Image (cartoon, rainbow, N blue to C red; front, top):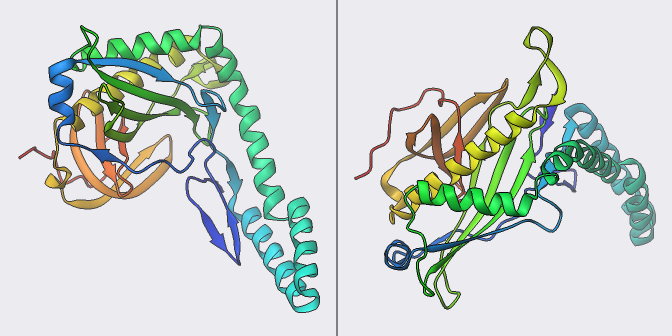
Length: 298
């Protein structure tokens, strides 16, 4: 069985990080004046790409292999401390780097980077920075965000990254969004994640042939950008996030069941939305299991 790590796994004194591309983000922030500032002055959209690149992939690690690696690391660490103190611990750490959890994570990261290259190459052929800048600007306008007209405007700063799923058949568009006033003060800050539908090419008898379909990739990317801007607009219009009760959100995407605690948000355009306990806004193209029904704004 494979798992997609998007959490920290702690066992036997060993910390194993997961989900490449999902670094710890800054806390969310929403000044009540953000919406009025945007409505008064409009927004100027600026898109940035992460230093590690626009496309990355989640790390996939076999559960049994991970458990064995952690047991090995734990045994080595305990033996080293009992036998050699600090010197033994340093020796155990060096061994773990080559054979234990460290090696497992390193191999998984290298595999994820390799799996991300075809998608990265496909998108880099399209003047990616210019394309994303235009698409986000058009999507923000279509979502109802007033566009800047003069020299005084709000700055809508978006750092975007595309993270391939564990099965590499769909992706998550991760948007770290800030709204700043003319002086550069942050009025709004949030992480918005939108899950896309499968993008692989439909081969013989519509079986996945393992190749990328450029048209599908571009279509899903556009859909995710449009949804991210709709979610942003919806969130800017709600200054009190306590209108929905916390519940367990469950849904299945491509056979992978996701379970997370959060607040269900109003759905639209075929997407279902929620706010997780970290404050991130997530939007998925499937219905939630055992949903309590549509959430209405007060």
